[in-house]
Length: 249
Length: 138
Figure 1: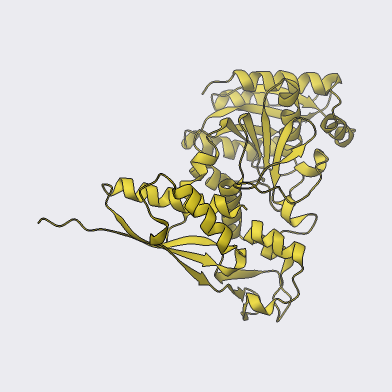
Figure 2: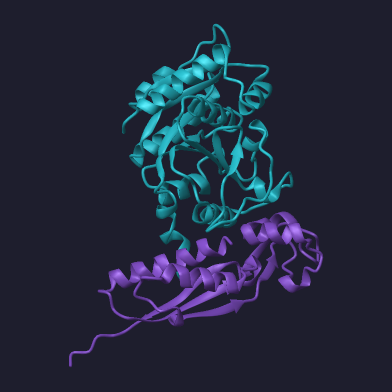
């Protein structure tokens, strides 16, 4: 039996200049927040930006970006939804809404292949992928099917998180997958972190830190509705996305 | 009309095999259509014909077989068919049409109610075989 979807994924992603997996081996570090903030910052910067939520079981990017979950329009495939004014968006949640998504690994792979095969992306400078935590099916499939995939790795200052994130960096290094750098999230004033040392150990960069922000949900919703990202958070994410844009593997 | 995207995938595979095998004539492409995805065959066929325009394959070589969707519960080991799910609403069927794995969101084992079941067969579009003309010496 031949799976024809494998032969069309490359074509579907031809209009996309760069595909970036926003990843972390640890849950709860703010991957979705970083992916959503980065998408908004790229959009503000005039880049054509897409966001694909591959965290099927914990899909939340639509909540962060206040996306109206309608079935996608169909043309010669399905058209991405719109997040705010500037971000093209696709997620399993477009079909599962707010129901639980009890999938085993093989089903996760099938769903991912289907979304990659039928979503018709407009030309994009960046397609950000909000990855699930861990080093499971989604990340292995992404490495297998998405040519030129780059990684943006999210950590927090926590020693425990850094330990777990190191496992992902070690695996990406072993696979020679391009790592753009680390983003340190939820940083409080005066917090001491070994994130820079970890980045250096794996020959990558600490791209910047995002401050812990009580109002993060509101800020993202406001950003999705057109308000520019302001304050320390806005400055920090723009600095990070500038470095991501300048990165060359 | 996302059937067109799937038809394009089938053509892409045939095209790859055609190139990899020295452009031998394609005699038959046997496509399996899983019942779960609710593919509209007329839309799929029109998409296929459009995509094939200008390519060296006739729509006539494409043959379709509909495969019934069958499930097995991982919890109670019960087996059942899609047609037993008379409880699915239009929106739920539509979601499964777009993404067959949405079945796990909207369906439950009819015997024990578990969401932990596997799809044994009949998911979506796959290619059973592609027959190419063998070249003769004479």
